[in-house]
Image (cartoon, rainbow, N blue to C red; front, side, top):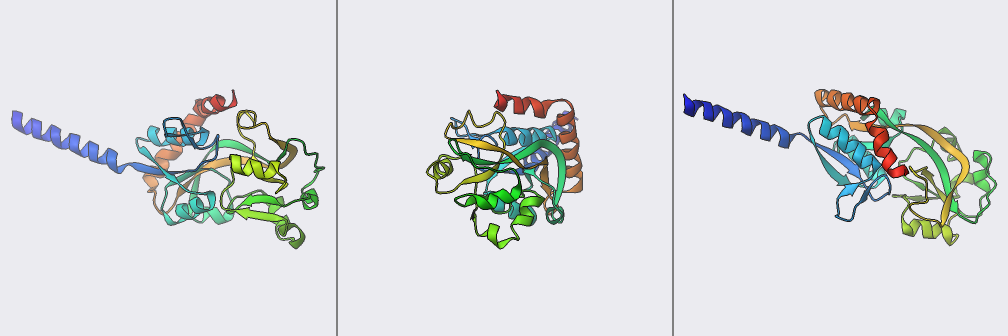
Length: 250
């Protein structure tokens, strides 16, 4: 009887370990501080990484980080190559392949420009009058007004498309040297002061909306989606998301 009890316990332990190992949620990351970046130990961190990891772990799973530019991440989410990615705006096109849980952050989009610039921008159409091109990231939603402008050939010709935008030294240098007038970016927690003093956010708001975690319809089962949704709601309600953001605002 004692041997049988031990065997049953071992079987249960093995089953639990197997279940834990199988419960892995692949979360998209990329170098774009303070949303995603590697710390001094080489571990992925950032406020989106921390929020996403908290949701996944509270749902009883383990986060696996998959590095991909934004546009590639969208494609992977559609194909089931990743399970989840953060700071996603809801669009009709994306709803075809992703569930949206949250929100987990309120996004304000502005133009990042050189610190000594004085561009007059009071409406979206003024972006046409900038001296150099502005950079946009493929696959990123910049709001309905920008979507309308992109249909205008006189505006579209002044866009420099890239597969990856972020507050990186090389991109900031392009703005400082005047190679581009700027690039569109969401306002980071704590502003730019922690990252650089060479550029600034133009005060004109390009777009603002709540953003969500997108969950792949192809790779995530309904039962797991329910668990993730419950944890997002709980972490938002108990202030955990705000506490994570506070670390990057101070």
